[in-house]
Length: 222
Image 1 (cartoon, rainbow, N blue to C red):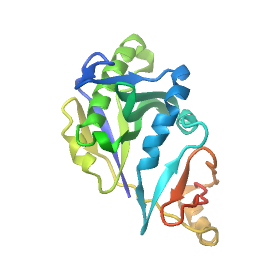
Image 2: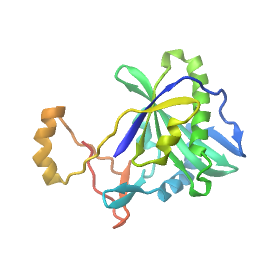
Image 3: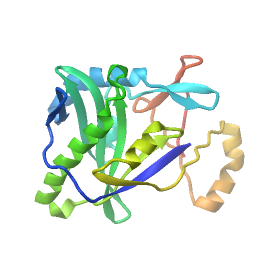
């Protein structure tokens, strides 16, 4: 299960790119993506997530950023300890139901830098930089931000105590996985309650690799 969080900014610190404990927080330009892609993907290969009685890793293919680009206007941040990538995170400006909203995602911290609150420091730096951008581009101002955390997550309570943004728990998402035969049987019920459905493959863009077998899990998204 995942828990989405909605936030309503009430105070933002100015200035991004500041150094905290020798860390530099930097928003990548399009030209810098290739330079940092290998280091970002290396952190991704360390992270594991639960899937029933198994675990999985996420793989974003040859172009790490392709999945995020399809969602909206991507602002991808890295926390740098010298030349080493210590943590990463993305803010994606999305058009949702007639208004703009920031989607906070891909927050990951290298194990060597755990428990230094780097994800929150990265968030504070990003919010400061994008507040300046909103001030100069008021027509693109977004006053909401949401994120999704795996359950259980120690970050949930940390985010709700974040002093610069008021987080709140919005709801809990339940994710279901069916084989093709079972989905074919239940699809009329889904259509009856949710309307017409289609299936999307993210092969080569975002896939999951099972820890138990080491194989890519064949998956279509409804």
